[in-house]
Length: 71
Image (tube, rainbow, N blue to C red; front, side):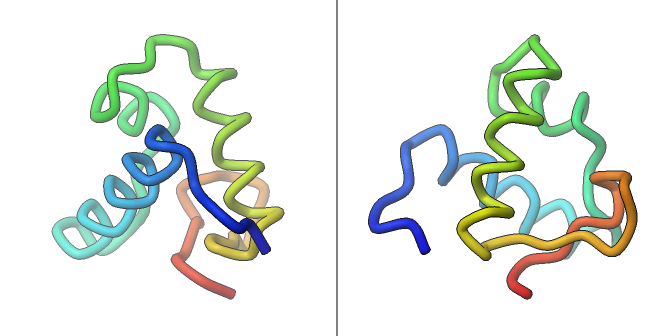
């Protein structure tokens, strides 16, 4: 578990939570990047992996579109 999230990670987690509430599924990496101001999809993927390792998000498939908040 992560002791403290970076500002970027908090923004990404908030983006995912709000997107799921509005659309019923997680945003794509590009949609997350646009929302939080990251143009590099690899930077977004890195932050998503960090959140996943911390147990804050999970996914049922390889795609980040299958992302869920929590385990």
